[in-house]
Length: 301
Image (tube, rainbow, N blue to C red):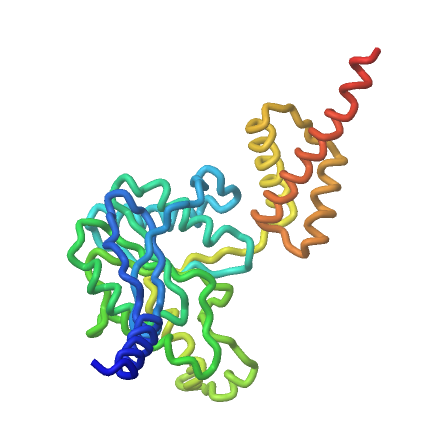
């Protein structure tokens, strides 16, 4: 073969290798509890996640009702009973994503598995369904912090998957989504301009109906709201107790602690579980460091 032709073929093969996805071994779902969908230029594949967040349901404080709803729905799903897709919506830092990870840790030994997918990869849902529909596990397709902007089209694939159409999820799959938006789409004041009264009832305009139609396809809405100050302080006390027990120290709850926790929430501009947890780490660590610094002086006496 002509040398120039060989070099041209080698260049073509090199270019094709860069485009094609690398060979990926099939996932051993018996050992793998979670995977990510990785998109490639021409296709996509499931990539096993080796390291999982060790968070447990007992670690999530102040959201008992929300935990119960999601856990009971997941139990129904694992038992082969009717169960719903879930939209977990609300303010950031309130435990939506952490709850999903804790659910996996609690029920992985019962056959629960999670596949996390990015918004831009929702068009790949039929491919994912095809790969897992016949497996003897129960899968949650998890899309974290999901929201759509005007003009985006990937939400139509999500609507189809939720709606039981030709792209519907198989029986061993549910879809859990977290979002800061109740309807997943931005809401504007002008959306209400198309509203009208019919027989003394308000009928939304087409813009609002389109936005509501997506979130309506989730059987369960689980709302996560910012805490009241009393609720926040209760969660702070629980977090400090857990931190103190973990590090085997005694931390007394005082007026100084309460005032510091309130000031911390003001700086964060939010009273939620994440803020309480972060403050507990700061406060317990501060107390431990202060005691360590005074210990040599006490020994010197």
